[in-house]
Length: 316
Image (cartoon, rainbow, N blue to C red):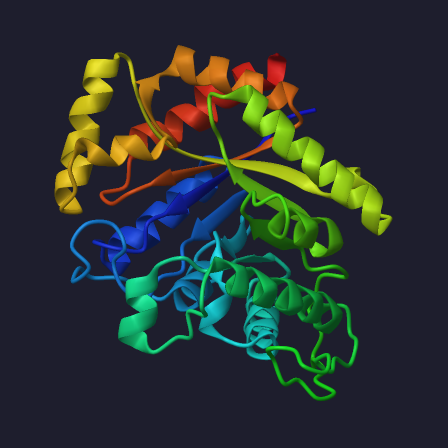
């Protein structure tokens, strides 16, 4: 089975002409989907850098593309209640002629919550509980149900219903994260797509997938209904030295240094090494890969993924 490719553009340190040109190029290269991230301030480097709103950006992209699916990787559940989010994503689905994906996670960046007045809860456990409740409401709303929040829940929906409904019969929900007790249980119950960070530790990825399968069995869900997606931040060149040179220039543009390499999801490497890694992830059942690029847009990496790496992984 051929793999799917998505590309996420950082929403910071670029302008609309650059964002528009990058979106058109992603579609021209045959990517399957295009993603924004959802932050109300810069979360990489200096927080006082220019940052665009995710859903406004996706709506604009929908008008200059015609084929790629569009989503947020991943939306902060803490930013709005599920009724409003369902309404926004439904509107995106209509203006894009049925290309919306609802990407959501628990929310993690404390400073933006503090500055913009979003409830951060008492800890990550709170936010994941809210995410589970929200995901259930979102699934119901997108499927045409009238949704009322459970007694004692975090939200206060009272017979909420979407008019109009999404164009897609089942608008897909992507949930990001790999927490074994809460997040993967929520994925098993409500998600159509599951996203986790790609790692060279294949045992970790296989274990997380096994936990998801167990949760699916517990809730009576066929795990094959959930598309496995892996997320990574690559810079691809003929040599690692060339890749590192461009990577450093990108990081400087975002007021960052090489310490970000410690995050573990950044691959500054060659076509051959990246192909090898993706084949190993594919053998675990991850057939969708979403690559991230900071501004300035990494044209060469985007192109080489589409024209060199993708065909090689498809053949494997």
